[in-house]
Amino acid sequence: MSQQQINRNSDLKQLLDDGYEVAIKSDHLVLYNVPYVDDNKEVKLGTLISVLEVNGDNTTQPRDHKAFFDGEHPCDKDGNKLRHIEHASSHQQLGDGLVAHHTFSSKPREGYRDYHHKMTTYVDMISRHARAIDPKATAQTYIVREPEEADSIFNYADSASTRAGIAAISTKLELGKVGIIGLGGTGSYILDLIAKTPIHEIHLFDGDDFLQHNAFRSPGAASLETLKERHKKVNYLANMYAPMRRGIIPHSVHINQESIDLLDGMDFVFICIDSGETKELVAEKLEVDGVPFIDVGMGIHVGDNKLGGIVRVTTSTPTKRDHFRKRVSFTEADNDDVYAQNIQIADMNALNATLAVIKWKKIFGFYADFDNEHSSNFTIDGNALNNMDKI
Image (tube, rainbow, N blue to C red):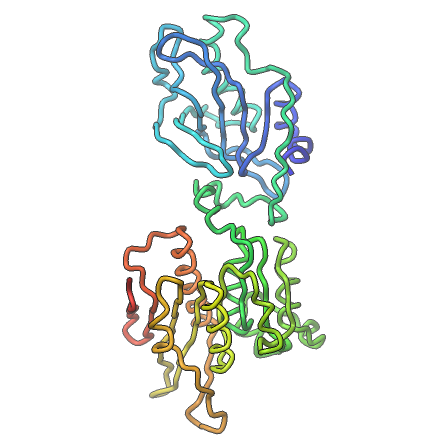
């Protein structure tokens, strides 16, 4: 939480003790009510913002020397724009309602020692001109702001999104409930990818144990001792990601007529199972409920002592459902058929999962989507990706 983080870091605590109005919002360090001069030579108040780089709960030396500003571009006492810090001007959404209109750039030869050094340096460059007009103009108001304790799903800040400048875009993935049906190879890699997004609840559905063959086509590295303990897949995977985030909810059941109601209230579902009967049951349920979903599949075969085949991602949304039954089989495989192989390789599982998650992110506006395809097939031989069923 932001107030705790301020208190445990000496550079942030020093800003607070010096009287600045400090907050941490959307993984950015924010200083409110910084006096500046506008182009009419009037003193106004703006907000100074910096990306906050941390390791765990501890701040690191700032590597990004730039700062953001919410307000008009600061000027000197004569109304001339401060060109020596000017970098870029554009409306930027930084996440959680935090907005900036300008970016400044000023880098000391040795860099900034810490965030106290960085923020006070920028404040001085901006506010000294305001003090030339109004000697009482100061950012050191000693006003204590009530902390905005955001209930983040993560146990530590998502500094990757903040550093990349995509924190506001990442909020598009703040869904309530997402389900993964089947936590074998592809399903487990889907979990690995979406666990790093701000979904509030990720529900896992699989009644099987995590066995030795699973360890070779799932993320991470299970120990022999763990395999001997014979955990349920969903429990093993939920515990794997618990150090990073909350909200991963295991259901050690197979989806069937008795358990189908567990899918009530889902915002999205990934279907990662072989059973055609279950796929049909789930598809009908989600279609009636108006829920978008993705079904994944692989057909890998041996030929000429090499592996070939196709990786499939089939999407169904309320705006397009008519193609789904043409692309996905609801028949059951014949276990006695010598040609009915179930070859799964970790890299193909990971690719299948990645293609599915990219499409999921497109649906919710994280990635651009010009084709709006609802079916994709990747063919190993030729490295070809074919998009079909476009809107």
